[in-house]
Image (cartoon, rainbow, N blue to C red; front, side, top):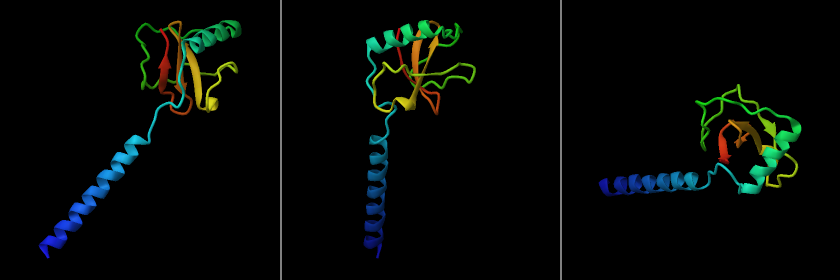
Length: 112
């Protein structure tokens, strides 16, 4: 009886571990590759549209950071050709372009 119970517990633990491993490998923060040229396009577009840079010397956005609601987000310019462009927005923080996931406001890419 102990042997059967041990086998059931071991199999359950293995299956649970496989499920966790699978869940971890299928999550991604970005499906796009961001290029230097895209950063230039965003800067140029923002200048033409006269979008203001959000200035805060204490805010240094890094990948994974959630931006505060006081930061205005803009749709990506049409010139930026990526999969699922509606998934992303951008802003300019301290004169640097920053791409975020629109729904979560989490930073997915920055340019220096």
